[in-house]
Image 1 (cartoon, rainbow, N blue to C red):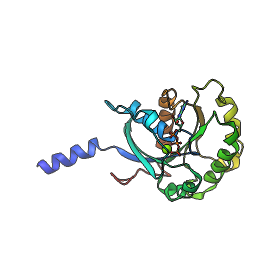
Image 2 (cartoon, protein in one colour):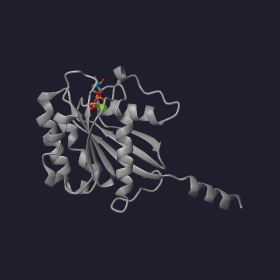
Image 3 (cartoon, rainbow, N blue to C red):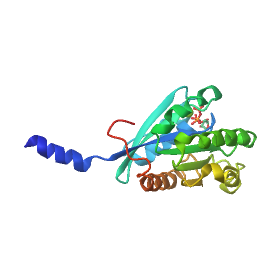
Image 4 (cartoon, rainbow, N blue to C red):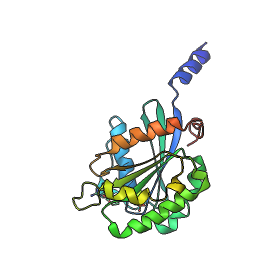
Length: 202
Ligand SMILES: Nc1nc2c(ncn2[C@@H]2O[C@H](COP(=O)(O)OP(=O)(O)OP(=O)(O)O)[C@@H](O)[C@H]2O)c(=O)[nH]1
Ligand SMILES: [Mg+2]
């Protein structure tokens, strides 16, 4: 009886699990963003001090429960020699958050080139894409109106997947909620194409 009751309890409380990649050039703010998302969506979680975050040499993982689903984040290192590892994760992912350093105009072309390479990969076809113009707390940074047309340029590569460009500051947390909410709706809409993973598989 206990087993049956426990089975029902588990069934009703179990959340569908989805995997979200956080990608972008080194120094774009991916790990800072992950900490901000965990802080916003996890009760009693106090994020790491941003000053203590160092460049990622492998991967950071994090999980949040939002709406009726769980999002498992994989934050990968963005340095050039680590970018070749990104595509190992594509087929397992349900969405991509691509972070752009809006305060680094010089590296925008490099970021765009990597972005185009990423979205050309067929293992990501149909996967929702959230492009975040980060560091909006810096007064002289590029606004979303400037960043959006650059990353929207290759509509044929983006295809029919959901794609959104939004402003954010991973440091202050502004814009984090809005982005995650958009992502959750897109992931749910795309469930027939990329169904949720079983528990603990992400
Ligand atoms: N002003 C400002 N600085 C930020 C913001 N987000 C990140 N930073 C800073 O940018 C630097 C890089 O941040 P990380 O989160 O380590 O960047 P990353 O993309 O994870 O870099 P890699 O791990 O090397 O790929 C740090 O000094 C952060 O404090 C932001 O929204 N505003
Ligand atoms: Mg990092």
